Structure formats: C-alpha cells, structure tokens
Image (cartoon, rainbow, N blue to C red; front, top):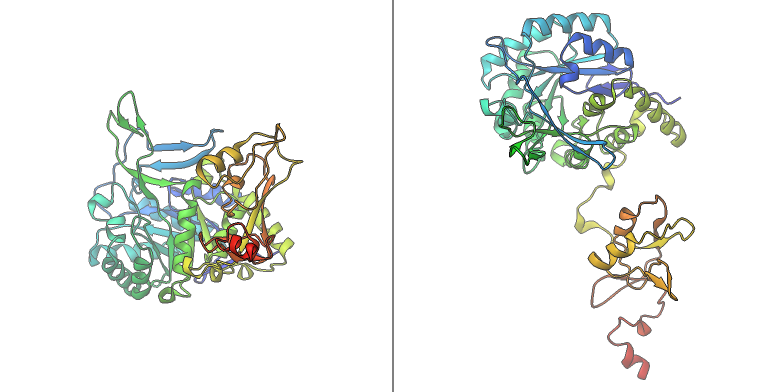
Length: 438
C-alpha cells in the first residue's frame, strides 16, 4: 500500500488529513473521538487571550445552501472563537497530546494586534507540547469587527508584523491562515513569507449571507429577527480554494512555501486535487460536521487505493504535480481542437443538451432527424465549449474528443474541424466561391 505518512514543516502525522480549527475541535472530548476515528491531526479551535470570556449567540449559528437532493453544499456560520476559558483549553490540549503523541496538534490563536498580547500567549501554548501554531487571520465575522481575524489578514503589513513577533517569541512552527476575502491572495502570502512564516493555510471562510427568511425578512440564521454576515464553507467553496492554493504555489515570490489546503474537502479526490496543486496536507471541517468523524476512513482508503493504482509510492509523488500545468489564459494553445460527441446508446433523449446549446450557445446540436427526436452534434458549428457535457444528466453520455490540429476560421478566430482538409473549399472561407470559380 502507498505510504501516506505526512511531514508538514517538521510536524509528523500518520496521514495528511487534519481537522481544521472549528467547532469539531473545541474540546478534548471531540478531539479524542477524532483521533480514534483516524484523523492525522487537529487544529484546536481558535484560542483568545485571557480576560473577559468570548460570548457566542445562544441560538442558530448556521445558515445553509442545499442541492436538489438536500445534500449540504455550503454552510455559513456566525460562531466566534472558543468561548471556553483559555486555561481549560490549554490543560486539555496538553493531556490530548500526551495521550496521542503520534498525532499532530496545532493551536490556532487570535489575539489583539499588539506585540504584548502575542508575547503573553505564546509561551502558554508552548507548554502544552503543541506541535505548532496557526495564526487565525481569516475569520470574517464577529472578531473582525474587533480588529482581529480578517481585519488583520486583509492588511499585508500587519500579517508580516505579527508573524515576525511569533517567530521571535516561540520555537514552534508558525502556520499563517489566510483570508480569501481579499483581491489578490498572493499579497498576504508574500507578507507572511517575508515575516518568516513556516507555512500558510487557506482558505478560511468567505464572507457571506446565505439566505433571507421571506416571512420575517431576516437573514439566516436569524437571532431574534436580526441576522449577520458570516463565514461560508463547504463543497461550494472548493473551486475558490483550489485557485488560491495554486496562485500561491506558482508565485515565484512564494515558491516552495508549504501550504495546508482548506476549503470544501469532502472526499479523497478533493484532497488529492489540493495536494496536486501544491498543498502539503489538507484540513477538513464541514465534511466532518456533515457526516461525522469516521468519514476520514473513506478518505484514507480512497487516497491509498488511488495512489496504488497510479503507482504513487508517497505523498511527495503527488504534491505539486499539477502546479506546472496551471498557466495564464494567454499561454493556452489556441490550436487545440475538441468537439462534443453524444453516445446514442446512453442518450435518454431528454433534450437538455439541445436546448442549452440552442438558447445560450452555438446552435450545434440537432433535435430532430427525419422527423424523429434525435440529438447529435453538428461538428461544423461546435466550438468545443462543453456546456452540453455539464448539463447532461447521464455521466459519460457526452464527451469531448480532441481532434488533430486544424486551421483557424479567419472570420471568427475559432478552430475549424480538420474534416475540411482543404481550406480553399471550406464554406467559412470568404474566398471559397472565388477560388471555386477559378
């Protein structure tokens, strides 16, 4: 079997699957259950400084977006950092690390943006035996209004400053958690790198309102008739997270900076995609909250089976393999040609491909042939956009078939199918009639 042991900035764990800092990692009871289920590590729910306790709402804390089958696609939360006393959390962290020395235990921290606050909490965390710290610069709600979380993560100069403090006052590896609520994710990553961070983790949640109750006209979740923006996570944010991980992985200024990938990871395939784009390991939250801690067993088995099938012996064979294939649009090969093909044996004659193409694309799919309901791609009109593939309800019914390089339509700039070997006779060639006449 493939070896999926993980070494992330010197922090070792039996697999690359960590639980992200969130409600599932708020106390020893949860973390012990997670480790028994097989998780390789946890990032303890974010700790704050000693002082007046954090007060969370005593009511709904989550808003949701579902698919047609009621599958949870996105979760919005308005919960703050841990509301348990700092000393209680520290004592539990120490005991858990003693009980599970082979698992990674990371302390997420968020304190006011001043040197003394960070200097005070770091030795307390260090005494627990934690393997590292994660600086929470991502939380977009509640704490950000207090000058913490994403309020820091949106200012690269603040990121660099706090990272420098942490590297000065602790021996532990420093992971900087980045907010996606920013224009260019490379800038905060560069700032963290300049400050000496050992790694970055991303993405944190996306600022959002998921829905509005049209009876009470209150955003969900509603607290006494009022609602607030919160942090959005779950499968729906995965594409955003993948892009941001890739942006950092391929940025020359942060090349080689270790990345812990976060954002909508639900299956082993999701994890493999993050690692292929440069993540050294992954963190999971919403999937565990949706399906329970034992979902990690499917992730572990699936990742190992895929690696065995593909001949990947260790995680290093996977990490970063897709990064060189991410490029800017201007470097894409405009001579590449692909056309849609419909497998008539699989087609259920629903017509979704036809109507999508007819109404919103290039009128390249027939609906009737000799008076019979029939859907087939007209190659001359197909530009290879693959919308039909994505709207078809039957997996594998419509595929995109690469063709040999052809010529470029001089009027539209689009590739022309090689079926017209002689450009002089192509009907789209404005010179064709003249050439034919001659």
